Image (tube, rainbow, N blue to C red; front, side, top):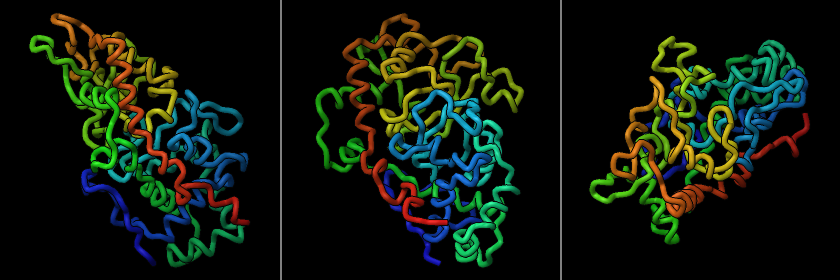
Length: 336
């Protein structure tokens, strides 16, 4: 079988995460892509992974909470699937330690795809298409939940977004506008009003070329978070309202924002960090005491600076990623 060659910029780093028992192959990726867009994996035969993770929206769905089988609502906002090759913990609360583990949750969750793995296996086994493909990938035609998850994970690892205007700037192929440059400076700097240095303090959590560090933080949405976040399974008070820091890549395409989709626009997001962070026992240390005003208690960005910061965030849109035919729905040309 042909190994799949991952193509990404050197500045993304080589700390990629591919389990030894699920090497990425061209055939495995193709099978995973078919399964990612396969509605038979849902109880209604109408919903696939691709419903909540739409390529045109950088693999999100534009809703505060996704709609699953029988119009049930998921409990959290649908996350982008960009650049998961480097990730080590999954979901907003980090409860899955691998993509293979992550895949099984939405497939079987009653509010999402709502179907047992045993039923999914039976449905796929009864098609003309899948037994032969599983044989090519795994050596025999037996379909199992483990093999389904492994194939989808292989496909998801190929969803690399690395050709935004920001990437082009980093390789000297794009000259940013004045606002984009100012926004980039603000993004990359912490404020130091005593020295007259203004900053938006973003890189503690969203630093580096991939615009996320694998961190979990309470970002001051509520004094007491209704959603416990990581605390639901650690039991720690200091984990209440702590969620995964998402990548900012394609952020202009992935509204609404936050784990519960409460903010409809990037303006609202920037306003939150500038003026509306709520104190709590679990608030991230990175968000405490940062201000552009001497003795200030909030970031206090100027209206012009907010506009510049959003200009930079728009630089992170990767139009080739959302139109790449390798990531689209293959079933239009495939008959079961």
